[in-house]
Image 1 (cartoon, rainbow over the protein chains, first blue to last red):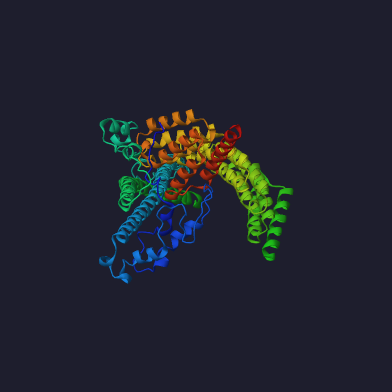
Image 2 (image 1 turned 90 degrees about the vertical axis):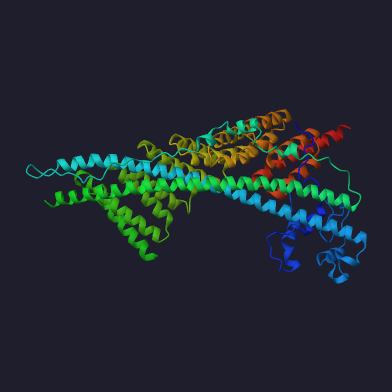
Length: 292
Length: 289
C-alpha cells in the first residue's frame, strides 16, 4: 500500500528555497525586491522543522552543490559583467545550466502554489454559492407560505363590512408557483459516475503510480543534476495541469450555478411582485373598513 | 449619554407604574411593554449595557403575559446582545431562554441560529466542551429544517473540537459523512478531498496503521480521484513513516506538503501530536537497544 510513491517535491533541495520567486513579479523590480518574499520563508519557524544548519546566504550547509553568492550574481546577470556566455568555461556553463534548471523548478513550484491557493478559494466560493442557492429556495418557500396565509386573510376581509356593503373581491394576480427545482446534469450528479469513468479508463492515472520515477542516487555531474531538475519540473507541471483542469471544472460549475440562481431569483421576484400587489389591496380594504 | 440614561430611567419608572396599576384586558402590559422598549433603547444609546439587558428581560416578561412568545423570544435575544458586551454567562442564559421559546412556537430555524450563536460565544471564551455541545444541537436543528449547508458548518465545528478533545472517532465519522454527502453535489464535490484529509489526520492520531491503511482504501472507493491527490500522498507517506517509526521521514513529508499548501493551526496541532507520539516510540526503541 505504502510503496515507494515518490512525491514530486520530495527531493527538492533546501538550497533552492533561497531564490524562489513569484513568477508573476515584474522583471523591472530589483533583484533584492524580487527575492525578498522568498527569503521571508526562511525565517518562518515551522513546528515540524528539525535543526538544520543554514548558512548566511540562506542555503542549508547540507546542499551538495550550493553555489557561492558571487557565482549566483554572475548567473543572474547572464555573465554580462564577465564577457558573455561565449567566454565562459564548460564547467562554468554547466553550473549555469544547473542554476537555470533550479530557477525554473522554483518558478514552476511557485505557479503550482498559486494554483493551489486559487483552488482553495474557489472551493470556498462554491460552498458559499451552494449556501446562497439554498437560501434563495428557502426564501421562495416562505413567499409561497405567505401566499397561503394571505389567501385566508383575504377571505376574512371579504366577509367583513356589514350587511349592505358589497362583498370585496381581491385583485387576481395569478398563482404563486413557489421555487422551481432545477436538477443538476443527471449524468454528472450520479454518485458512482466517477467510478464508472475510472472503469472506462477515462480518469487520469493517479499521480502516486504514474510518477514513480526511478530514484537516482545523489547526482554527480551537472547533466545528471539538470535531469533531476527536469524530472521535478515534469512532476510539478503535471500537477499544475491537473489543477488547472480542476479549476476549469470549478469555473463551469460556478457559472451554471449562478445561471440557475439567476433564474430562481427571476421567479422569486415575480412572485414577490404579485404578493406586494395583494398585500397593498388587503391594506386598502382594511383602511376602508376602519374608516367606516 | 447622561441625558439618555435619565430618559431611560424615566421610561422604566413609568412602565413599572403601569404594571402596578389597573388595566383593562391586559392593556397595561401592552403599555408597559412599549415603555420598557423605549427605556431599553435609551440605555443602549447611553451604552449602559447591563441596564439595557435587564430592561429587555422585563419587556420579555410583559410579552409572555400577553401570550406573545415570538416577541418575548426576540426580547430575550436583544437582552443577550446587550449582555454580550459585559457578561457572557448572562448572555448565554438569555439566548437559551430565547431558544426554548422559539422551539415552543415551532420556529426551529431561529432556534438553530441562536444555538449556533451560543456555541460561538463559548468558542470565544475558549470553552471547547460547551461549544461542542451547542454546535451539535445547532447542527441537529439545522438538519431537521433541511438547511444542510449550515448543518454541515456546525458539524465541521463539532468534528474540529472533538479532535481537539481527542475524541477522534467522532471526528472521523463526521468528516466521512460530510464527504459522502458532498460527493453527490456538483458544487460541494471539490471539497471532498479536504474532508477526507481531515478524517485521515484524525485516523493518524489514533496511531493504528492497519486502520489508517483500511481508511485510505475506503476513501479511494468513496472517491476514485482521491488516490491521485497530494492529500492522499501525504496521508499514505505519513502512515509509512509511522509504520517505519521514522521521525525524519515524517518531518520531510509534512514540510513538503506545507511548502505547497500551508497547514492551518488545527492540522498542525494534530500532526504535532502524531509527531510527539512517534518521537516517544523512537526513544522507547532506543532505550530497549
